[in-house]
Image (cartoon, rainbow, N blue to C red):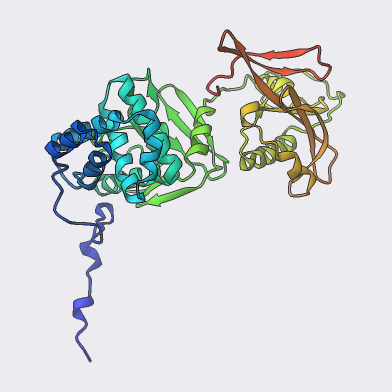
Length: 405
């Protein structure tokens, strides 16, 4: 029998918390682009070759932070030299790998730069890179960072990473910190996330709930579980960046009051709270899958805030979606039978006031009104929202929706 001992591994020699991928590229770190050559290209207005030169020689795998920052500043200088009308054409000439490298430089440049015009240029490049290569270009950048984070973490178990989604442009000058969410069950476990440049917060992951509950210094945030994720080691990353970002914008928790309305036992009950809430959740999920982000409106919102449930004697419930978020194809989904709900009526037009009423299939109740909500603009500034009345003479005004505009 041939000797097979060379194929034997001692699994006890491997620490899963210190995973290392031996198949990764282990070439000698690159020292970065030739700055003299790049500047010569720029002086001769040969920006395309200048960009290709910096892309071909990134300082990948190099440990010296000063070198990385010098290279990034050089790349940002090249990017800023392009006219806005030239950026899209230049990005179209890039291959996928070039786009990924350039996206890394863009994020690093946003982190380092404090110049408003420079940051605006980087945002323009970012937009065209995403348009050319899709949101995978964002995920690949942060997946690469997560591999390094994953190797160096001094904590085991599930982590939820949302830094890619929580970059926010602050006063058009610089990007805020990166954030990492850690499952609450690991709160007492030691970790070195702050040392790796992340701001840490914790979340509750209750499998019986259809949302994640984040604890933030500024208050709680609740995120529906309606998004796909992928894993990099023990780190979970949202795949649908836009959906998670929209959830985050709308996630600020507001507790209901829970007033006792002292209704009499003989008062009629038309809608049962838990059953109606479950039906609303199903419609919410269907609208989310269609690309709309609904929210409680009018009397339904009032009842939920006041009583923490559906008003029992009401005959319908109200949802709303913003006009910019409304999908005109949704009524066809209701009519062709591919929805869990059916269309009862549809009033108005999208441009000046649209309302749909739906009910669950095989049931007559609850009747759910879906209003399209419009932006109220005064002197070029968003001051309120409104829903036109069906009579054409009445307009229902609403204050600006917190975090949703």
